[in-house]
Length: 323
View 1: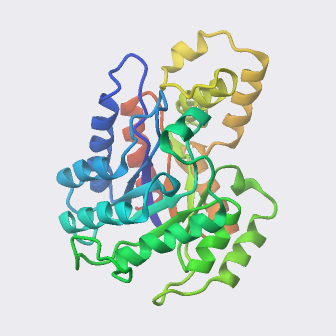
View 2: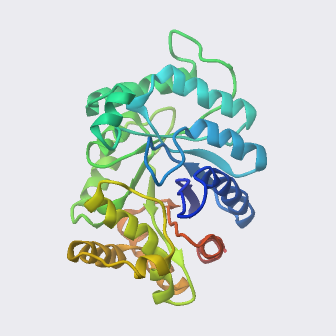
C-alpha cells in the first residue's frame, strides 16, 4: 500500500497567514524523510483559513526543498483554468523536477457566488469537465494541435478527484480516481467502485486505480487523538453557522467557547466519523476502508492546530502503514 499526504496550508489562529505556506514546505520535507509516496497541495480561493490558492507555485517551492517525494495537486480545480495553462504549469514543474510531478484535477467551483463570479465560472457540467480533462491530457501528451512547452519532459500522471459523476468521467478517460469524505460511508460505494472498474477504458495501458482520501491523526490514546481532530472539526462546524471556514484554533480556546446546540451536534458527528485514535485504532479503521474499497493508496489529509503533534502523527502514520 502507498501512503501519501495532502496538505491544505491551513492557517492557525494568532499566526501570520503567510506562515501556513512555510509550514506546508516543512511538512513536505518531513514527509519525504518518513517515506511518504506523494505530497499534494490544494487550491482554494479567498478562504479565510487556507493560504493555498495556486498549487503550481507552492509545488515549485516544495520541489526546491525536497529530492525524492512525488509532488502534486489535490487538486487543481479545472473549471477555473484553461487546459493549456494547466498543462504548461505542470510541464514546467516536470521539467524542474523530473519524474516527480502528479496532476490531480477536480470540478469544484468557488465556495461562494462572489468567488465564482471573480473566477469567471458559475457552473461546470460533468461533460465539460471531461472535455477539459481530455484537453489537459492532450497537451501533456503532445497530442494537441498546439505544443505545450517545455516539450519532452516525461509523463505527468493525471488523477480525478471524484464524487458521483466524477467516477464515470475517470472510468471513461482511463484515469485513477481519488475518493473521500461522506462518500466513503455510502452503502452504494462498493457498487459504484465496481462500476468504475467495469466501465474503465484503458488509456495507454492504464488500469483502474483507487486512492482513498482520509483524515487520520494518531496519538497515544483514542481520546488524545480526538482532541487533535477537534480544531478541524470545529472549523467545519462553525462554518455551517457563520459561512466562514476559519483558521485552526487551539483546543483550549475551542473548549472555552460556548457552543450552540447545532455546533455541538456537528462536532459530535465529526468526531464520530474521523479516522483518529491510537496507532492500533487507526490501523484497524484504515484496513477496514481499504478492504471495502479495494484502494491501492491512502491520501492522508489530517490536520490540527498543534504542529508538533501533527508532525508526530505523520511519523506514526508512516510507521503504522509503511513500516
